[in-house]
Length: 252
Ligand code: 13P
Image (tube, protein in one colour):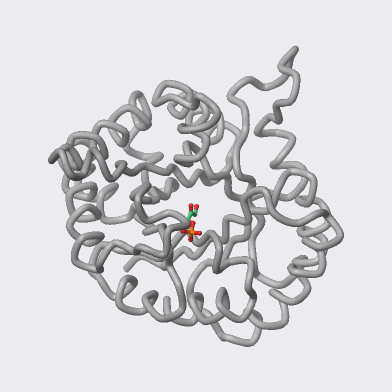
């Protein structure tokens, strides 16, 4: 069976000193939950070092929120896979809808980043999800599976189990409006069936598909109990350690 993956995406919140404090708190509260889920936190680039230090030996992994696909070069403002790996990251979030929406991230750049992350030995979390407008126009399946197909273009089946996908409907992010467990499960199943048709049973059965979008302590258990939901990518609630710990516990 798949181990649930709970990742906290801290987005552009907290200075390095504040992030260190949060990580110390996290260590205390999540360390005590006896969690069976894999737990990851993804602070800003400037906090990776101190959060990594604060979490050392805790079993909680470090992740970055983005990276560039090139190994190095004249790319002002960018950070490479080797840079985040050597600072202690195991995971990296790729293609978050906020990056697609505000920073011109495209399916093509997500695909290049994914190949580079795998090449470097990072565990990518690839985000997909439709807008409310697309959902209401009946385009959810086309949009989401199109993003999955494009992100995974050229990636070999053997690499698929090492990738996590995060289904984050844009209309549920930071809005307090969560997808119902049934709505989320429908999409997760569609994604898994799609992966099965392209990469085969082994890959489709192993890949973890997280749900993200207003996951809170009071809705986490029901979401995570769905057959094809393998944990969550948590925004706002991951900045409140009691809430995050409760969400980690809800994953079993
Ligand atoms: P919220 O949990 O704040 O809705 O954010 C979800 C998200 O975007 C995680 O990547």
